[in-house]
Image (cartoon, rainbow, N blue to C red; front, side, top):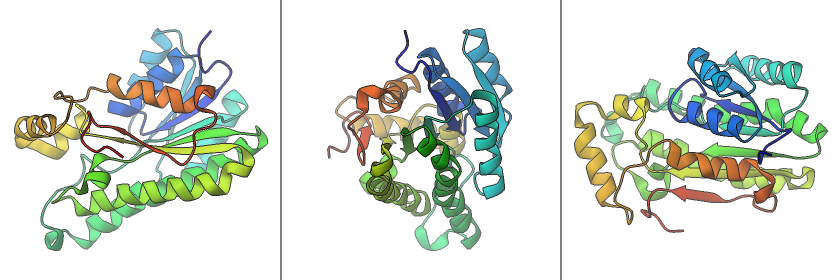
Length: 253
């Protein structure tokens, strides 16, 4: 018996990296999974199916409310309910860091639209089905950038701080429906997105991050999945409005 038997979980940004790891972990615990991404999800679907899990891939642009609604509709058509929403999709590897006053207006707006508005829209699309199911769990992915206060990525850090504020507000609003809302704030994880964001400075930056942690090692996607499964499962049924740091002991709340 898996911890998530009978549950249906949506993972946005499920096409690669952390999103794919979340899909595989949730499916391994018995959930039927919807991998939703603006990228192709074929590799994620193949990996979960090869391991014996149930999964569908769905195209998703979190910046488009119609796309978010279509994602929720596809989940309901395939599996009949929505119990878990992992809001993982974000602009990260696709943006450029720099001094706050040199960032372009276009990048600022795109980051806020995807990283903040995108979560709001996915919640709007999925919460009605959770209410119908008389409960659910929403897991929003924030970042160490928000809680530590990371320089030279002020747009990204601000968006991820907004995710924490949204998490707390939604937790208070949706508690009456027994819908739990929590955030997870990881340090830099060894993924394709991190490689793209850091570029040629990756090795030095990752080493500096590890040395600033109590546990001096960089995170692998597998270091994140236990927290996601916990928050998705009934083991955390009385946990809501929290931000869980998975950062090797960098920020201690």
